[in-house]
Image (cartoon, rainbow, N blue to C red):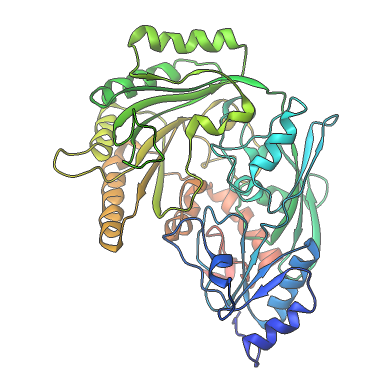
Length: 473
């Protein structure tokens, strides 16, 4: 399908759409256009034909119908995290951030979450009822987009991916019709949405999700000196693969704290190897597990202890302000010493230059992450034992090219040890699209493409994961 604009000015087209929606319509000449279109990762820039800031769910329907009539593609953005393909001049960018409503049904242990809501808007009211959603490492991320990509968080080994706990989706399909997808209604579309990514099959306007009885956890970080990195990672590997309880979701990482004022003085500008995690069972048992580390070696900094799950952000302390960054990922079934040495060398400073990577983190999967069979992401994208995420800050074009090359060299060095699968929520940009097929088995990709053919054979929604209609090959 060819995507072309109507034979009229974009200003006239925008003026027509403004009369039909409650939200805002912005064109490139309007004040506020750049801010409305901005992605959270400053390495990417949207340059759409126009931006629709939806004020109601009906606005999303009108925007999709407008795009269809005018021959535009459609891209969706809530918080701007997890961008795959930036919107270009042939695209209407729909911003959903104003649609942030959340309703908790404590008796049913569910939440109804609108498309623009961040996890913080779900966690706070859920915790008032002693319940928790399966959010990730930060409450500042959009709940719907995170869930559409799978969603691996601090309760993952106990309860699974966020996508496993979805009961239903409401969405606007590429033809402008509204749909409801659940296990009973449009089950193939429902299956595809649980791991097929946002911006692929339509605009999800809301979801109903399950909540879990989690209030107080034993969580935090143990920081060990950087010179112990290989030793700590090897011990962690042996610790978690030796049958660790599924009530613990944990990780080990090398972190190069930047020399910024937002970083506390004791760790500012320093590098550490960190054991990080969240135990959601009996607190005494969680303390016993972490005491095994304390008794092995006294950490340089000990920030593990009981905490309300409402404070889950403090486990990872992810940044909330937009930053320019590159991110990549790999899955491991096993982690030999040679792989550990490669990771340490890739993440540590070399003595002459500052480290290229901000951090390299290995998250322990398995448990319910591997065992649950719900949705499109139930095979290659969740089957490994350890999931690596590498993140680097970009300080300019030349540095960005050097960082990209460094990440690629690291991936090549790790190639003999990884499964070849990908977890798509831990990638951005073209790599996310290019490696999409590796997140799914061949059978699952065939099913995903069949759903794509059925709802979006013309590939109007082409800014999500690299799932394209069969006729596009």
